[in-house]
Length: 440
Ligand code: ATP
Ligand code: MG
Image 1 (cartoon, rainbow, N blue to C red):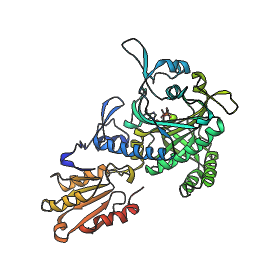
Image 2: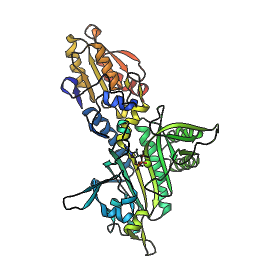
Image 3: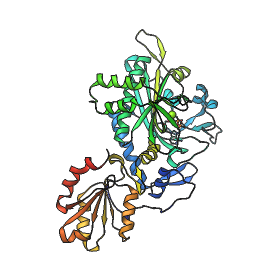
Image 4: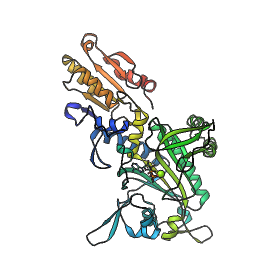
């Protein structure tokens, strides 16, 4: 997509109210990504929506590649299935309970274990149909007691939620490990380093579960503790051929048996030099929890011996909208956002500082894709500050020398490196420099 700022909708702010404390919250409001509508509820403005969609596309691609099946369940669920699982009362005040005009009790789904179990119940009949992993991207509502930090802890938020159905615990664990691998790859593609931590099972329950945390400077969400060997193993994982199933599985096992925990799960370990304490933002969570929901819904299949058995289940979440905030927390500087390549709302930002060079600027605009063009008549200082705030990875500047020398300046947001490039060589230059100057 190509946009000219003069024709786009980009409400930028110089300042935000002093109660917006977290940097990702400030930048997502200042750069015109989102606008608050009420407490913890936001409109996605065009620029923010593009980031959200780029994240969605990457997640969708990786899950589909693995053979997992996309569906879309409704936001509103009947209270009955939650009464059956016992969570209607135990979930707590975060669940938004609603009565329809016939006085039926319904709710805005905070998560979908009960619903998916009832969706597939009766349709998956035999072990021969297993395993199956379904997933969706869907808006969730949780009436958080303290919605704060913008997208980080919203009330309405976009989640990728996946649900696995298996014959037994061993099979569920195989896919749990596969999901662990896929999650590490997804977050890498999104431009954030994560640490998988053993975590508290919360309202979902179950045997094994890991949260994936983005490590940040600011303490937004909570502390995590991990063995300093873990980041090394993660590095090794990313440097290993992902098709080498044996090597990958060995590494996954190694990572899972290397110490890590969230503060909800464990107290801080006492002054151990090989244990790192950090601020973490939970961006994903995977569970293997067995028949907790299939058992009470009587969702069964016929196993190899001809016996009816409840499905062994797992669930796998990613906070799609929270990721926008987490990515900004991990990728910014004093001037604004520094988007990693794959999630930037646009790949290229074009700035024209010379009214006489509009023809050349227009040509560059025509030739490139995924580009935002500042064609306004603001001062050069304002244009530079705007492009820096927006965090577009590559800036092409048409200036005084463009007409004279037929050259532009190309500036990389992350490294601040500047290059003079002849107009006819722009595309070639961008292709060769891209990986050197911009974080994946
Ligand atoms: P938290 O502990 O942060 O309240 P959770 O453990 O209850 O989250 P899950 O049920 O694991 O959340 O949901 C899956 C993912 O959805 C989380 O890993 C997180 O990234 C995201 N998420 C959860 N609550 C919110 C929220 N209020 N706003 C934005 N994203 C959220
Ligand atoms: Mg969680």
